[in-house]
Image 1 (spheres, rainbow, N blue to C red):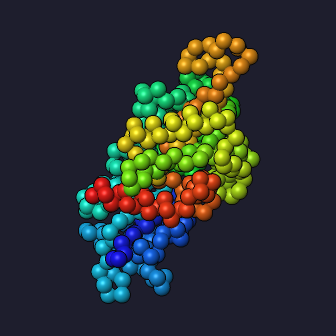
Image 2 (image 1 turned 30 degrees about the vertical axis):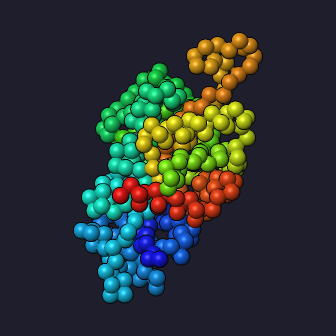
Amino acid sequence: MNKKIIAIIAGGDSSEHDVSMRSAAGISSWLNRDKYIVYIIETRGLEWNAILEDGSLSPINRHDFSFIDNNKKIIPDFAYITIHGTPGENGILQGYFELLHIPYSSCNVLVAALTFDKFANNHYLRRFGVKVADSILLRKGQEISDEDVITRVGLPCFIKPNEAGSSFGVTRVTNKENIQDAIKFARKEFGDVMIEAELKGIEIANGVFRKANGEIHVLPITEVVSKNEFFDYDAKYNGQVEEITPARLSPETTNRVKSLTKSIYTILGGSGIMRVDYIITKSVHEHGVLVENQTSTVDVINLLEINATPGMTATSFIPQQAKVDGLEMSYILDEVIESKMKEK
């Protein structure tokens, strides 16, 4: 059998560069070497290099995504995109690989760009009945008064870059004196800022992928219990969190979440592995109608955000969920690669 050459493209230009390289190492460790020849491609700006077996670097020719290994020109058969942030999560690399007719792991240009823009994505899905927190978008250079923030979304609220991940640039604001500083802090990461009302409840994450036969497979749900004020960088990557899989939800709520995840994946025309993050709140209303007994509550599923290129380190949500589901990561990656290769 001829082995397919898989290029794991990682790094990127955002603060998530190093996290991305850790994801690449995870993916590389899971790919079946009986089926694939694997290279990690590290990018930073215009510096793109294939990391060869001896640790040396071979520059990428971006005209055809080729490089030289042992005096032989290599053109990968498949690109596994695991850049978190630009240019791998926002559609730029997807467009590049489309032009080169190289199949790649993630969703297409439109879906990548949409899901990367938190405000646009949430309000797009809101039109399909998905519940999201109230929010405000500030474009680069646009200002807002403290009073307007409080009137429109209230306090506490979250102020964060509209297009960034790993909780970089995020502040939980509890008093108006900190609003403007939080906006400035978010803009250090990205010019456009999202101001979002705080929802108090159970934070969860739910992975999903498409199999080679076209079936959408939803993974078990992970409950996130942060030891910090919110699920920040330290909670995500420095162990300051408890992650419980499967989440401690009722069977009914579990089924509703998984059904919603599948619906969102379908609405977006998702492909590859995606992760949908929610927060479960309590309400005495269901579908806008007061429940008969006001002492009882219903679980309300609120979308937080969608990650179209989720973290793939050994401790990330997707590997945890796969293990609970009885699936090997090598199997999931095989299914994703075969599914995407069929599209071409």
